[in-house]
Image 1 (cartoon, rainbow, N blue to C red):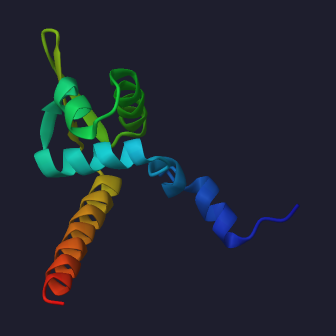
Image 2 (image 1 turned 180 degrees about the vertical axis):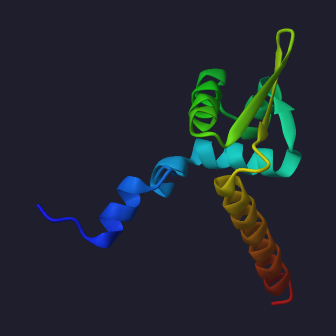
Length: 113
């Protein structure tokens, strides 16, 4: 088996594959919510994402493991936010903002038709 340069870069990269990070609608919803609202507790993320608590917990745990989400505890309350200095988070924020801008532009164009 031979490896091409892409395989070598993927295997040696400190970042997880994008397919893994954005592998489900639930993960994307959570990232979108955290991009928009900055910091939220898990109950608010559950409500806004319209997902069950276990699913949100699982996704947040994954994001914490790869370092793109931070958790702060205040007694029993946990607050989640995207890690502000993480390179992946910067890309995710840019993606979400660009996508939202494109959606708004597209809706504006379609409203004149």
